[in-house]
Image (cartoon, rainbow, N blue to C red; front, side, top):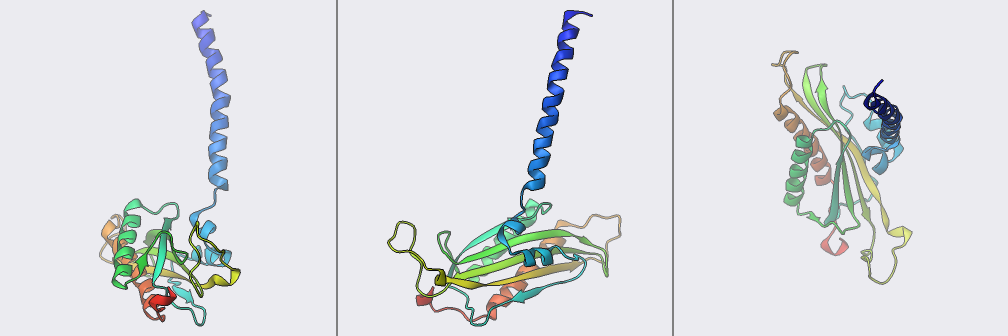
Length: 214
């Protein structure tokens, strides 16, 4: 055997275990990384959000006395499998609807509206449709505003207010499509709009804080 062939053989023997190690690390990282839903929402809501996708499980938990603040930061994330176009559409709709309700979006605010697009997929029963499921948590402080970073004073545990939590399912039926035709993106956009509209309906039905309360 020529020297070139021997060197090629040695290179393959060295590269093969290295490749396996890299693949193992990648797979391990993917399997241990928490999803956005797991990181940002309580376990009971995570479990519910991942339950039967075929049915509408829209539901809300709103503590007595909870009020919608006038300012908040808005965080939007997606679970794996949700397309970038659906995410962009939801972000644009959220910004538009919240602005119409005069909720000031401030990235430095303590009040937080957390929105997670759990799933955007096709369902077949009872009618073929595009469906988008969104999980929401709106946490807000109580009492006087918390001090910003660099300001004197510290927030007490009593400043943390209860959270409005819920799941909104948006469904756009498309009975005109045969099973062999792809669901159009516009159907997912409308499904997302229906889900966001359900969130806005909840906010509209909750008393608003006065500007002095934040």
